[in-house]
Image (cartoon, rainbow, N blue to C red; front, top):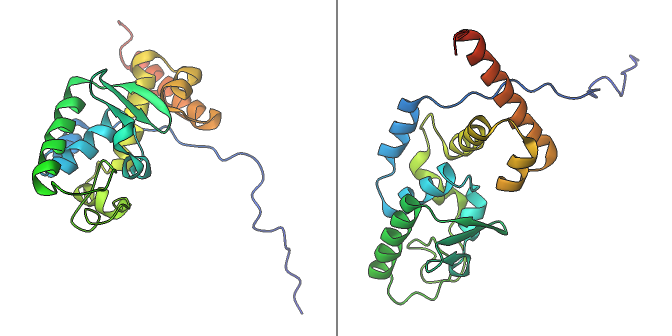
Length: 191
């Protein structure tokens, strides 16, 4: 009989995360070109501009939108509706009204299956347009949060407030932004 150490697979200590890298512009451009439907364009904006998760997008209701005051609520956080998201939202609402004029579904995003019910669209359907792209919805969301840390400084409190991140995640983004900013400073000593 051979003794097996029951603690052999237990990891001790914190996991060291690598430095998050921003997406290349051509990766983002390919994802933008892949979003050909009004729903896919709106999903892309909600992720790339507002860093919404796919599940949060699926759970969006009409009550989460205040067009008059140009506000959008994502996961309990009120955000200002920028011009691009507002335009894409209005395009989607117009498409939805023409496609399913009698639906009782109050979810923002619906499809042929959910238009006759009151349930939400699946995460699979929401993310279908970006499947196979380098810049998936998850990567676009990470890129947006990293861009915020690079633009406004690597402040984890700011990131936690803007995106509702927990402290460990906010610190991971801040650490990556700090490392990227230091690399840029070392590469350009004149600046």
